[in-house]
Image (tube, rainbow, N blue to C red; front, side, top):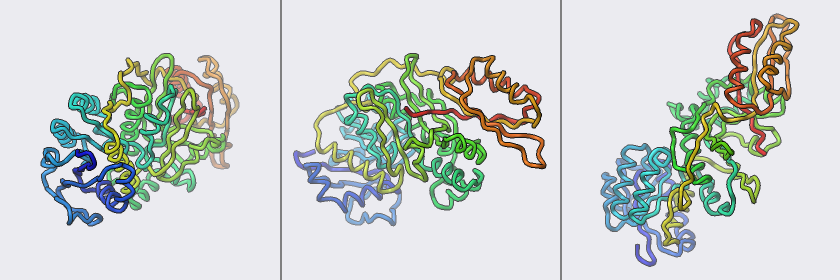
Amino acid sequence: MSSNTLSVGICGLGTVAAGTINVLRRNHVEICNRAGSEITIAQIGARRDNPNCDTSSFNVTRDIFEVARNPNVDVLVELIGGTTTAKELVLTAIENGKHIVTANKALIAEHGHEIFSKAASAGVNVHFEGAIAGGIPIVKAIREGLAANRIQWLAGIINGTSNFLLTEMAEKGSDFADVLQKAQKLGYAEADPSFDIGGIDAAHKLVILASLAFGIRLDFSKVYIEGITEISPVDLESAASLGYRIKHLGIAKRTPEGIELRVHPTLIPKKRLIANVDGVMNAVVVKGDAVGPTLYYGAGAGSEPTASAVVADIIDLAKTNAVYSGYGCAELTPEVILPIEKISTAYYLRLEVEDKPGVLSSITHVFSELGISIEAVNQEEPQDDQTFATIAVLTDVTREDIFTRAVEALEQLPAVRGAIARIRVETMK
């Protein structure tokens, strides 16, 4: 990099890459003024062209590794996705002395430790703002804006597909399969939506956020992951009657016993701002010891929202000569990641029972025997042609393994019909 020019090589020409090129071209003057340097695209590596982006004036190669080895490229922007070829590409670029900008959450979550170590040895930076929550500058918020704080916890709606599905189910009372089909038609869900609805995508992002917040090593294998496929309109309606909404959250929490890393459906009080984040939007709440809770909201995906984050990382590289770890701290904290059985939350459960005297008493007795306090009970009376009733229960905070014992005991009661639905509850205080 010369004193006043930063040369960028972009690998991939999909949705985000096209947005990045378009934003760099459209806002060139403002971007260069903010960076204090001339930012140019030296080369693009892509297997095929993208009709949403004119690359006729650029040097385009079909060999992405040519970009990684190009001596005229200062920064390699990895936007090809996946983890295998992307990892090889990034490590090759680092070996050739190039800074890295990526929007690849799976790459950072699963291979970030190796990549950061190699980058530190080579004296180059790795930036990844676009990997989490699209255009929301959450990495910079934690790393810079909240740097004076000891982060106590963070929780986020960090997958727009899941949030859209839960919003549609809550507003229209539709079944999961129906809203998934609608999301696929609108382009909000992939043909194979398993990474989104199964919580894998959110877990990748949570691992990165937790490493930034707590200074811990990236370890995707330690995250507890639960998707949204078992959530029914009945649960959403029942939660609403109790004053809650159900959201799919990624939660990282510092406790005296260790750090919690978990992704699962969660009841949140309706009055919390994050409970009212709907559709495909994302939001992250971060609580620091000095600042208290702060909320970051915006578009969590899409061509130009993610491009906004990618270009911001390029500008940062143009502005600074400092080399810092991808973790955002000089030393990693020894990590104790709690297994899900050892975490403590409040719980919601829904069960169908025979409509006869004494059933509610037998249910409350199970909780009492295990020392679990009940905060609220909501019983839906049976219809004229039904012989069973639906009961929803909110408990006080208890440990997961104890609550699991309660559910197992309830399933043995003769009056209980079928499976029991259970969802964790967070007050977000």
